[in-house]
Image (cartoon, helix red, strand yellow):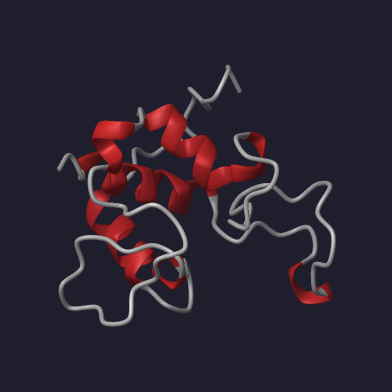
Amino acid sequence: MQGDAISQALSATPGDAQRGRAIVANRQLGLCLLCHTGPFPEERFQGNLAPDLAGAGARWSMGQLRLRIADAQRVNPATIMPSYHRVDGLTRVGAAWRDQPLLTGQQVEDVVAFLATLRE
């Protein structure tokens, strides 16, 4: 981590924006639309608790996006956004999910690749 970003990718394979979009829109995996709204006209009932994902790629670098997905508490300790890749130091984690990231490094990279395409 450097400042407010994770500069190095979390996987050896570059992220795939199409897979990343599917993760963001998936209500069982990413759960992003529970709190965020974004350019998903086919998805009803998008959240309004967190920033709109539209324009995310213009607001943040890929490294900044990566940190916000992997461990949002590093940027904002009071955030309600889950740490999608961090596993240490978490509390109130169900036994089935303990020591397991919510998203793999590759999935984080896929989401970053997708969010980076959102320029408007």
